[in-house]
Length: 285
Length: 285
Image 1 (spheres, each protein chain N blue to C red):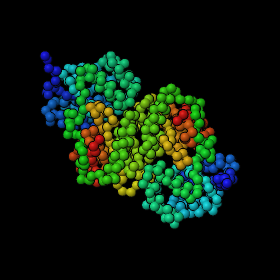
Image 2: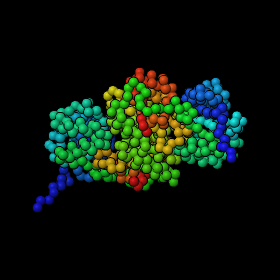
Image 3: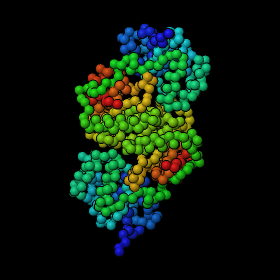
Image 4: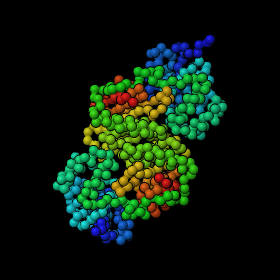
């Protein structure tokens, strides 16, 4: 009898780095846990600071180069962290490794964002690279249950959180957004391709222009993964820019599906939210 | 035996006029049909051109003045046409007629937009004023089935229309928006409190900024009433500004639930859509 080969704990873990500093936060957490991260930067998307770690830059479409590097380093696990703007298939600069997989790749581009990621993960896994999520390799970065801030949701806020969570659940099958803003069972904004920050900006503008006439702190941002969403691939996240956006929109707070949403720069998020008198809380999803 | 009293055809029909020229289009259609419309302008919302008809200006909250005028003229039917920005209850300047109904009115303001309108209609009907819809008094303004433009939806567009209609159906229970923009089963935008024009502007901006990377005419605006929505109260509508917005967003077309969406300035809409190579079509809802 042979035991199934588990990659040794010291095996390098690759992080495919999307935009922003969050991939670096995950890398730091992974390193603290005793594993050496190997960072893959995407030209035009990733932060240059990834160069503080062992790293490789690739262009979107350089699939062959990427797989060769992963194999060369014996990488058996990879996390995909941070957003990368969805390219058009026709814009990809495909290398030979990509052309070998072109039929698979082309098919992906007929799917929604989530379908694209699921298919991309399947391609990596067929090459022997297991896809892992930030919540598995850096669980301290995930929203817990309950309030993180001095302020906690009021009973009215709790009702809006429940309403927003139900609305997100209804949207789940459509691979649309992961965020809504709700105030008194009224839907102020629903996220789709614009993203959370732009959606919050819109709420702020509607209040400024008088299209939304609300007094004082009002409205809850509710964020949750889609039903059945593979958290290894595309985990919803908030960060200081979310707090700033919620403050500009004069919301009462931010509610995150506990265990399902990443909080980047948690200490700063809590400090900023407290300063803006926002609650930041996890709800049981 | 006494027959139920039907209001005589010559009985005046009131039109509570929201923003824009559409209430005037309805008034013209009503007059062509041989009835004399009595227009009620809302200070700060309605077009001054309503003064071409018998009219009355009221402020939001002048409920007593409004009911007295309707009774004085023997108005038994009223249509509510065009949008009025939702006021906060505390901002209303309530007159005595409103204060008598204050408990009812205050309760309305705890509801979503649709709930507010339903309750408002009930208050009018209790006072003996039957609420009628634009589709009843001016049916020539409603979207028919099929393409109005030279261009018709392609099979891909038809798939996006079906997807968008299903998404709107799923949103129905939440009293949210009536519009989505879909491209290849991907949800680009969902309308909530910002309205259709702002949503289209957002799609145009996402294309300009490169957040959405789509080539050529792409995406369909799908608009439909909510399930169970009372079309007498709040009928979805499009007009030349919708065509202009869709053109700026470089969509392939606009699909409307046949019988459920008003088309303001139809001739101009068709001309503008043809010039922009957009389709404008009704789908069986």
